[in-house]
Image (cartoon, rainbow, N blue to C red; front, side):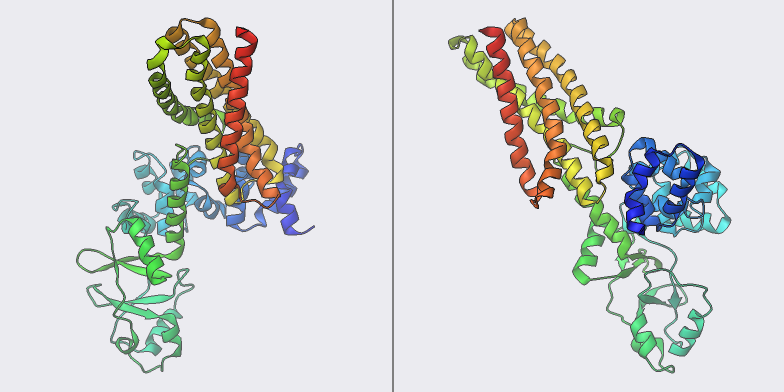
Length: 449
């Protein structure tokens, strides 16, 4: 069986893991994957499996796996560790990765973790923690290789051979003077092709623009994109080299910004976990649904200004936009999370049924909540308990239909090679409008005629 097949079968095998032999097989398969692939398995697993998989990860690579996880899932595991365990799991990671992990912890816990670290690690991490996490200083890694401008290429090469390994994504060495003032960079390509007796100052690049330590991360990513950078030096306000930023750090910023932009359109947090528990998902969705309810009520209030000239049948027209609008927003929330999960490769055949169940339960609970709220408002507004019952039932039906449609629609569209991000919203809006109107008017026909 290929590694890819084993990887796809992890969840189904774990679901049936009732003995130590099966668990050991899953452990072996899991730990034969790379840390990013293990992190992917954790992120695509429902909560009841996620904890088991994490316990099966080899402690020697748990830190590398942890750094690959999203912020919310990182925090889920970090919350169950004491200070010594956090210090142990982050040992050996790059400084910027350690800082990213520590920033998920409450401020009161960070000093305890730092105290549990080795002196060298603590000093390096503390130097980065002084900077805001959304700046170049918060992104940078302090592990850099520097050389002086007056030495020869041969000396530089002999100097590099003394290292057991050089930092990852090292495409340049940085040239500084004795005060660590940044002078330029020395591309690895030029270092390898220049004559041994050539001095660094003769081949170094002095036109490179170093990044100020307080530059915000979005500006950093734009600079990388604009200049096609792989790495860049970071300097303080006195032009001293304090670290470097690499393309992997910038890619994280770009992904986070894209997540924020996409999820914010549906009123969701950019840390939204595709497979977070129902208990966490319901209140997050409920807040934005509440905001939408207020706007829908305002629209209905404007129509009701003409209430004195209308009879009871027109009261139905006043209330219809509420049902359709609430269903549209609930469906969009689900659709957005599912499309994002698909884009990240988190949604697979093995977890679709769990995701559908979770989203349906979320829609049902929010439907019941807002059915009660809207029913009370309508009862007081029109002094009509039957009308309140009708709109309450229609609200619950439409929110559950919206949750199912928002989950299954993008999966169906993708299966027939249609971009769900492009067509999903239009189709979903149509579905929620039709279901909302039919359920509301259908119930009205049953109860009022």
